Image 1: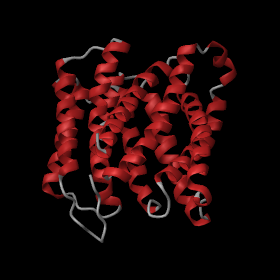
Image 2: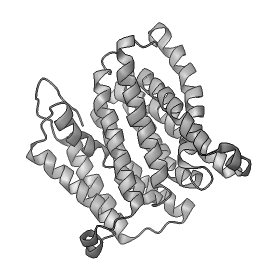
Image 3: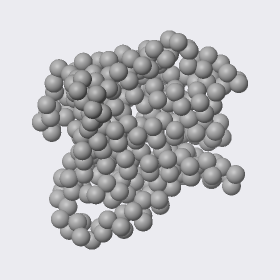
Image 4: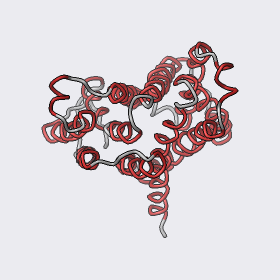
Length: 305
């Protein structure tokens, strides 16, 4: 087995871990308030990833003073904003719905990049984006026209869509510091900023009142998200980007909603309706087409995938 195939296997495993985060999150929000769940996830993740970063980055792991503003922005919007909204969304919607909406991240990133850093969408790319968003609309409306007319979408689906926007902004802004630092360094410091930002919100949720009642299932969900979905997920992604490039790595995200549907039906016993199956196919097709289309160059900036 050549090295490229090994990377493919690693990335498939990685997407399985990310899909599992939606299941673990759904279990976790039953025992932790949203901010507290995010806090404990990043408490463990930061404690693990920082020593790894220091070991492998050696003397290059310290940030320059001029880059702290960007890193803080990444931590607040991308990590804090995304996960606070993500865990809140899971209180009101299913793991399947949140995973399918989350699959639109590459598309929303493309749209934001066109406004924020001057990337041109083009007709074909815009068509791919609209195709995927139609899948999202089908998901949150459950295929019922009257819901669209009355704009009475599931609140959790709307919150999840806002979470994806936060993550997309993270992806666009990170381009400013990517040439200076490795993904491991950026991710580690983003984790740290997120953890610090979560402290006051976690204290507001009065942890001493609910912590004594948290079961082993709640802690297992936190540890799973910290180790497998966060630390291992990001490190494997970094290895993949280095080995096969960002475009091919991004395409593996298309597998997340597929694995989420399988895991949700087995573990959470969530219903897998025909509408959900059709929706995920539409979303995956849109994301796949978007990742394959070549981006037009504007202002010397190119975005892959």
